[in-house]
Image 1 (cartoon, rainbow, N blue to C red):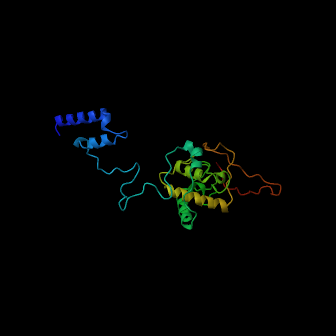
Image 2: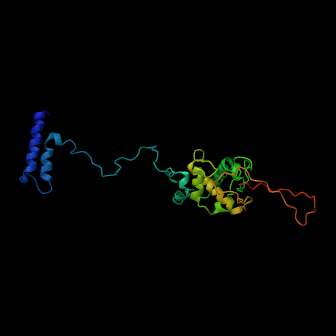
Amino acid sequence: MTSANLARAVAFTAALTLSAACTDWAGYDLDKASGAVPAFSTMRNDVSPDPYQMPREPVPGTVPTRHPLGDVPAPYTQSALDSVAPTLANPLPRSAQVMARGKLQYERNCAVCHGALGDGQGSVINAQSKFPYAPALNAGPTQARSDGYIYAVIDQGRGLMPPYGARITHLDRWAIVHYVRQLQGTLETQNPPPPVSAVGARVDSVPAVEPQPSASTPAGTVQSRPGSTVP
């Protein structure tokens, strides 16, 4: 269409708009008349899907945008553990397969600090090392924490514990939570945290506690020292 024809079409449409006799109250006549002008009739017969309607079904093999067991939580930081925890719920059922997976991941990533039994007696825990203490997971404060809190600590870490979110996947974290709950239900803690420092604070050294002979212990007898309970 030339510029002259387009100008005439615009003028024609404007005239229809200004004339009350050319349209009804709903504008149907005006709309029909405008459709007679090629420049305004391009999309007249096009299909117009409703808002948010999916006009075509996904092709075979399309990857879903939501995981059937729940999406990974939105990013959060270590400082938001208490606020994020109530929003998280374990999507995994408590099954033999999930428990086996949780045990495997726990032994690979957690037992080195928290111990195979969850008692805080991991192989790297030493009073003179940079990891002087690991909290017992099988009882105590951890037992009172929610599943969401344990998940979030695995993800972002806390205190001396580094974040494991980059090496433990979303669902594996939940499997570990199930396994920790199993440890809590069958075991008693062997490593209660001593009152040495505030939670999360670093403890560089703790003086060793020498055993004192009791009234029933003959003088000169050496008692065996219990395992370290350094925080």
